Length: 94
Image (tube, rainbow, N blue to C red; front, side, top):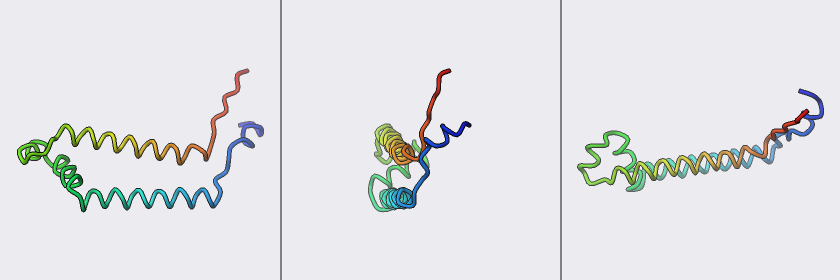
């Protein structure tokens, strides 16, 4: 890696790491709360344990599965937004 490329990569500052850690802890707390304290969390856990039994109890398995997929995609997008500013990719065409 040449020195010109290294100088363009932003080093994480203490403020950025504090924000990332704070947002990460907040997201973990919210996800745990949803899983443990809400009807949606109960349905997610039921589908994860046994799809057929959850369906027999009246859980809309396809809807819950799509919601879980969407939530995981949103969390992955949030992670990308938070980690994106830490570094950059510079492509040099010669």
